[in-house]
Length: 388
Image (cartoon, one colour):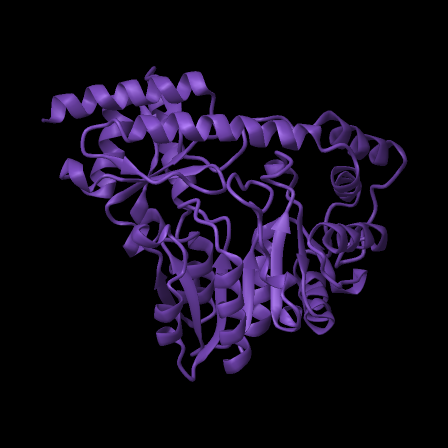
């Protein structure tokens, strides 16, 4: 049987591949500490869950408008007007079943075969995969530790060619925890305006910033004319399984994505959209408490990693990942991650899961308890002592 070439080029997201290996080892009786998955280890706040349950009981179980329910789109628009100081309306909002569909459909609506898209590397692998799937070429912007894993704006300028159609940014960033500054974003916008480029900004970790405040390129005057903001409920509200994403974009782009949604998945789960309303308008105590807990864990894991032989780690400014430099151990990224999984029982992700410039690094998610993080550090120290 024949299969499309574009499908064979899609990769398997590293976190899920390592999770499968870890689960297999657990089934064999091995103790595994999971520091590989990008998922908050908290339950969805009760008020949000109850809002969805009430919607079910109220009969909100039928088709939703394909781009999202009008009342939900208005709530999201109001959130951006209030929190990000953006001049947007409900017509600029699209609701989809997760942030990934927003990434996929936005790229599908803007990129043609042969185009070039600048993507961060190391970076979230979905960007690279979708660009390849569409027959376009990903051009890698090397995020360097020496620059706190931010874009080097001069280097970025040198990557733009007549074929460039989009710049993808992610701040706070997966896997490095790097956060772009207002100055970085202004330069990116100026470059996009000069060369008539789209900017896709993945802001799924926007509430998880520990140093300073979150800055969105969409808040720069004029930027929303060429910007697509991707966000969602998964990370901030511990709702990964709910599959709820929301995006902001020019109205014409929102209309295109409406058409894609109709052709692809009809619409987003109706009763779950009521959870968006409660999440964005209800109490934020659970979010604040979660962020504070992540802040404590961040210090524990980074301090601990910096005490391991051959390992160093910058303090991440956002998200819940520590991107550790392991070159001092003499091992490559995959070798280090495999040894820690099989010998220490610590599941982490090789930096190469996020692109070629991730070599020499390993990503640790601190979405786990301080007790487990300390135990993972103790185990890894023991293994590294034995490797000498």
